[in-house]
Length: 318
Image (cartoon, rainbow, N blue to C red; front, top):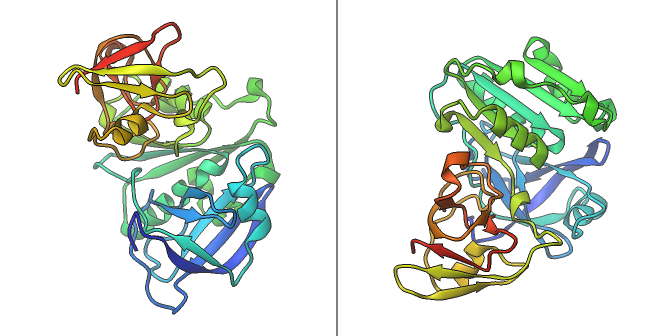
């Protein structure tokens, strides 16, 4: 398998593990070992309705016989999660790619701070298993959900009572957990956060004084999702003088690639910084989780960001 090649995997088990969250265990149809992965990795799945979606692996990276993913059933999406949760059963074949990791357990921290919101617990579960299995540094998880019924993997987390804080806000912003005491002092730690965009933005804001290399996010492209007020604009490439039109429903990165301009990229969700590009003129609407405030006037992440309202052209150092 590869990142561009889909190979059918058999669904060994399918089960509802929390309110609107379903787990799928995948194995090789012939019982062969699967390509190895590390904690934080995801794979692409072609859903029964033909859409391609990325799902984090939540199983133990040491287990070479199966992958496990968890899918949240979204009634307001494009139908990929509905097709998975309502239509996939044990015994079915699902086309999948080889795992890829844009959210690894990098660095050598004194400890790891794990923060998960809702379905964002999936890559964190693999991280816990890898840290425990390899004798990694101390870790602690803050797992924020709406209610006990919406909390996946409760049984799996039960043995780690002293290392896990689970908080339910009932959907009330006034009952949100205050992470500032957790993040006030870096102390050589690394933070790994996955969850709703609002949670990750809050963590980004609270870790502005941390070394950039110590803060890690997994977003899966929510920053790149079209918004109702998005509009077309133009990119001017300073080195060649070329102009590239960016339609309302297309990212800058996609438009650049379609026009034949090679721009390196990886996560395509505004979290890894691979596509960082110098902004020479124009005002960008920044939607990434990488740039600090003082960088936003001169840098842009074309995988998610756009021209700001009232700006018709961005000039890039390309």
